[in-house]
Image (cartoon, rainbow, N blue to C red; front, top):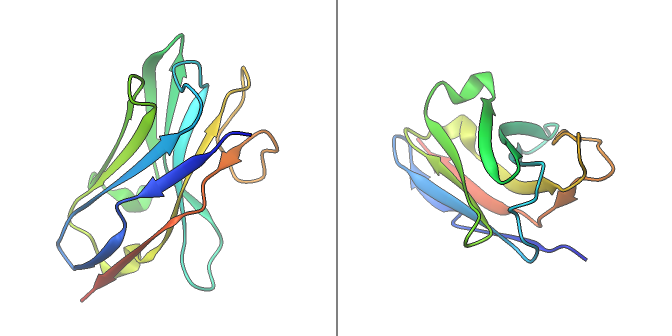
Length: 128
């Protein structure tokens, strides 16, 4: 059973920064994609950022439109860790943030994909 454990959430003021981390119990060198999602109160879960890899090489990153260049997703295969650096945080970034990973070949990291593994989430609260 794959375990993904997020950390790094917390409360910050608008304009502040946080770095989220996701530790995987499985080696992520062979992962097909890893992603960060978020779900605010009363909102649907949305993808924040996704990183696709091939043969252990990180080759494609996509970000939600709302990111606007403020966040950076990165993957450390040696540590089996996915990170999300978040700068210039806004109150609307307040949400539970989830890490997800998919090891199946030709798979995607999108809500509703059965082969996607999820973490339990870490709360981010941004005050104005």
